[in-house]
Image (cartoon, rainbow, N blue to C red; front, side, top):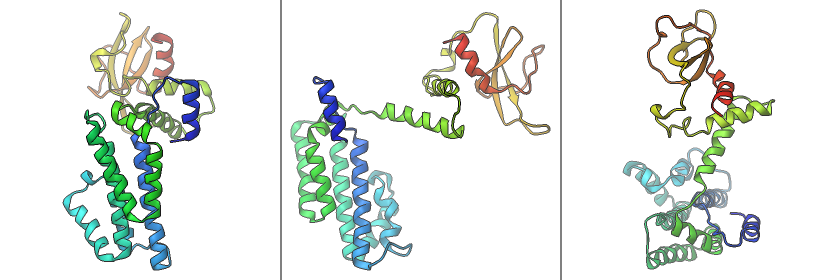
Length: 278
């Protein structure tokens, strides 16, 4: 939710429909809830929150979705805050505002009528205006300012969840490798982990076609002398060279007469796939 990006998109793509992802809207609501908790604790108690404070104990449950809380978890959050006084009542008011916003966004992909969307929006804005909480009113103003883009999300249901997921996988690969010093290897690893097959969208019988002189078998890999196998890699024999394809499980020994490469590494698939099936 950046005004700069919105202006750039409208300038470069004047016919495009700008949509705000609901993830970022709910993220702002959760940040608002945390700000309310910190401010009320500092004003009433004159210090930061402690583990013995009811609002501190409920801080995680306040950020969770209502449908993800069991009745027992909800009671553990609601009842102590309700008995706490000003802090608890202020937090519960902000929490209801967050859930009202989520109810509004949940209308996406349900084909709601304009009357239903307008009613949910009116309930959210009215609750925020009557709450008399500065942070809640600020978030309501933000939602109202971005309402055309939020309404577009409710109408179309489009979001950038797929691109966010791919970006997360790319960052995870770089973190698991403790960083890359070779840009070529980084691009190769990134392409492998972000393919549809690697993410489980393609079944085993829909894998890339292999040449006739390539056979597949599974073999357990091991690292270090005397250590048990830590994983199973599927191997492809091409001109008597074993190359790791992917972790698949399956029978441990290779077929009779086949080459035994106990030290085969699954990462060899990277260059093999780049050369054979790119």
